[in-house]
Image (cartoon, rainbow, N blue to C red; front, top):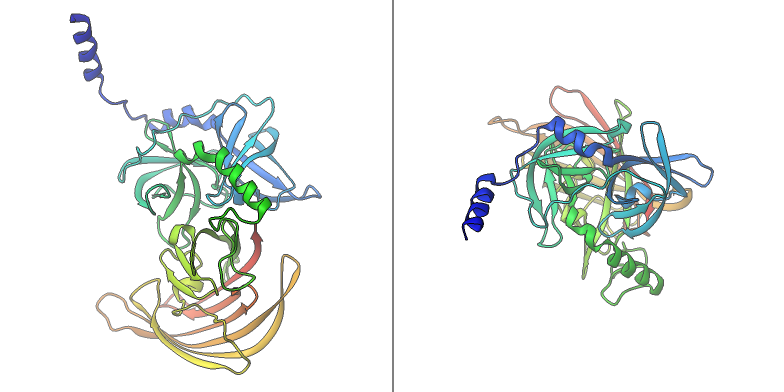
Length: 406
């Protein structure tokens, strides 16, 4: 009895595990976070991302990192290994890969359900090719429904961070970093590590659904309404181009839920009808393409040459931005997406953007945009905007659809 009392007292005195200093945490887990490079059929580089070792010879990354790849390698410094896909779960954007003769140690996983808003977290990955970069922050939110929640964090991520690790203060894996909201401040997101346990079963289900065309619950099937409607798990990959600096930023819209006529992208960050009309934009990531979006979006399913309309609205990006725009359908043109021709309506928007600062009355600034809308896809495939906001001069932005990852 006395022995049991002493053991209990020792456990109580020990308390919870102490948080690691950032340098100690980095030394503990950085050897398990690798860069990933993908290549096309001609061995030309395609994309770069990150991957985390979760079991002997097994790493996990985001599926969008591997999209269109004919081959890929994982590497750290001067060491590289060929890898192969083992378990894909495109709906959750998680893919497990396997590597032969790979000895890097797996990370420890945080207990399921242990994520708490406000806790200190650390992101380790390869932003813009800078291997094993450490960024710290807090867990700033849990977004989505129970069982499908994304982790929102202020720990900075950038292109190349996709597939990296989000760790708690004890060096345990909380999530896999996935995407950042464009111009959204410190709005960065990761999928929870507890999903990793479900990867094998979900990959099997996804493969069976792909083979049969659907799984009986709408998974793998398109949203109702038109032949080209989005399918569950599809990713529409755009690029946002800053017209002044030439900076190109990937913008990904992943279909993660189809509920009748509503199609949800990025865990509800964008919701559309099956015919492409925009229902809501909760987390704008596409620059002015989203922050200035009219109700219903920039295009509509009933377009015809010479059609005109006007819109007076407050944009979804800020209640301090009001728009008064006139639209005119100029006709059709042919664009190319992934090398394939695509017919698109050309729509010109011109008018004013009213910007409010502090308590001052909103001041008008000219705003114009040229929109190319595909009726086949039910979405904008190219968007060019020019506007003036404050004393910063003229802003120019372009958003283009570059591929559809299926």
